[in-house]
Length: 463
Image (cartoon, rainbow, N blue to C red; front, side, top):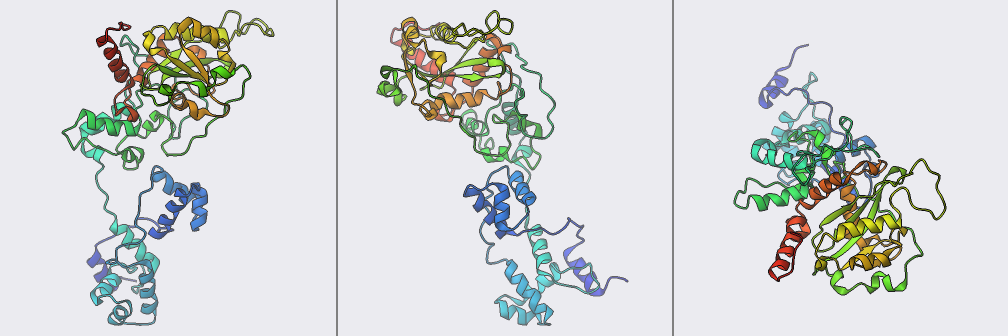
């Protein structure tokens, strides 16, 4: 059976349309309701169930948007036909209403109805048929205005973003490259669970976006939003760069915080409530926060973060002789390297490389690894304070830094593998990332500025 004259005229009017697949399962209003449910805290699966679509559809919407709400308008502009109006057109057309009668019922121009019937009617049947769902699908598909991604059009911006998102491997203090661990090839998923990850520059999308304004203050073409870096559906960046994001996730999801256990070695005079007020407001550098990040086999790395400048120093805690070969003895030395004596010695060796003016206080959690805090105060001049139980937010700077370090030292890996030089390379990488709270300066720049001010005041620096 050949094509009728009316079909041929309709096809010539709107052009040849290759089949773009099956019609959509939901309309704009459904997507708006989906993202409203996401904003209320529902998961993509629960949000999909709330609007009546399958979990796979909800997960696909969330994934394609990179976890970022596309901010769709609740309804289309009044100049366009809505799905309800298209349903009314289909019903009236089935009752043999003419174009002008339908236009009068809907309060639309007859030319609008005529154009709608010709443009969005089905031409796969012998007679032209108008179906509301198919017409809405054609209209939404035609309304799409895909644009060339900014990272595709601007090669300089593309190279800048890609270099700082992935970049080279970590460099040591002397400029040599530290390759880090050997990682398996990327398989198109998020970061591997409890496995090594690639050591790279790995600035966050927000850091890249804001640093562009510092590095190119007069070039408006060198601008991009953090959301554009999370949403990679247009193929502007390599999908493998998902593994270089700090969290290893391409979607924005909340992170759970672990609670610290209560310890009984803390006395009243070293509670955080006794800490001076200048440490709380971060106005004066020299107040530090510390903790351990734990790996397998009782391995650990110590972390020290300055509250004002966010400058980070890592403590090397090597295994002691006899670990793994000698039996453990009660109240004996901690052969794993993270005992109270080892941590005290590591902090002393690291913190004393700084001027005395930068050694004012240290806030720790209630771990027994700092049981020798009294001797530490004598050796270094650091006044030690302990946070309240189950209160990691009192050491928020250190907790946040530990989260950044997990990119290089994931949970479930042996942290005793890394030597002092490799730890210094990772610390230097963090200290040369721009920070939002520092006005997009790096911690190294902030600390250096303070050291120069001490030098001007006649105080000797570490140089």
